[in-house]
Image (cartoon, rainbow, N blue to C red; front, side, top):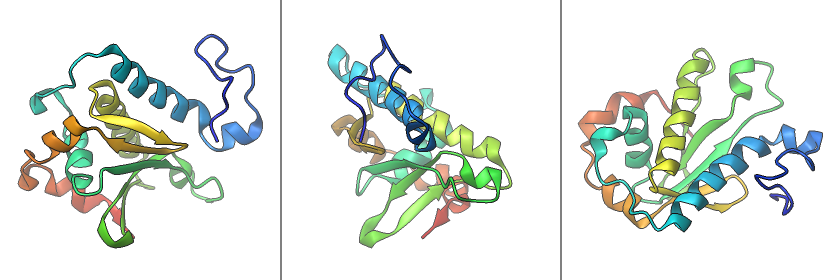
Length: 159
């Protein structure tokens, strides 16, 4: 659960090791970015050309369920597997995970691309590590040509 007293005025005052083990500061920052955009009343981005290709892949992959989460495997032996990664819930209980153990830079590019979606007003925070597309996010996702992102989608780990 996200702590109530973790605010921009006292961002680390109440953090525990368990919070750090669950990537809480990063998830809170992304949730606040989403909330700030929604609260501003500013219209969500509508131009796909301003977004990185990884952002488009996340949008396209989540176009049906709208469900995106951030996950890390703190028990993995491989450092690249412990990185926070973007996971998109697919239909019928399947998941597409953008985590690349042998290429941590690529994993981080997807996390940064997700941040761009938050900043653009295309994603909103739901619960804990779970986010969803906004109405604008769903709308834009429908306009993405699969051929444009298929190589990135094929790199993701399906489960």
